[in-house]
Structure formats: structure tokens, C-alpha cells
Image (tube, rainbow, N blue to C red):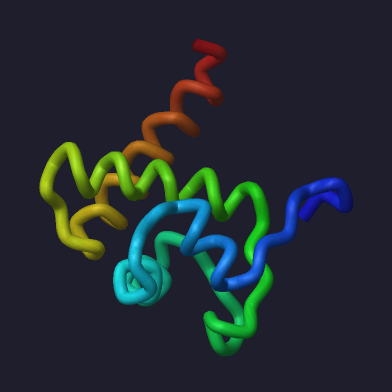
Length: 88
């Protein structure tokens, strides 16, 4: 994590995403973002916020559950990594 990265509390990340706590917990449980320890006590980074917002768009656009959203994100990450490896 970058020292200049933003740091958000549990309540701040929920407000920033404009979503409910149960949804945030479901994406943590689906390993969309990694949180060490109790999610309500964790600090969240700008990267995690971006990942949560991307998950929100996928979940909304495809009406996907948290596990389905996690799978879609994993596949998108793999495609992105393959493109980087090919210089595309």
C-alpha cells in the first residue's frame, strides 16, 4: 500500500460506496477485497474503494450475486494481466 493512499474507516467506506453494510460484508466474504480481522475495525485503502466500486457496477449491471461478481472480477483481472503481458 502506498503511503499517500487514502485511508477510510468501515463507516466511511460504506458512505463512499453508498451501499449497505451487509453488501460490503458479502464482498469481503467473496474475497473481492481482502480485510484482515474484523471488517468494522479495518482500514480501507483507495485501491479497495476502487475495487468495491467496480464490483458495485458489475453487480448492478449484471444483477450478479457477490460470488458471481467475484468470478467476473477474477476473469477481468486475468484478461487485463494477459493484455499487459502481450504489450497490448
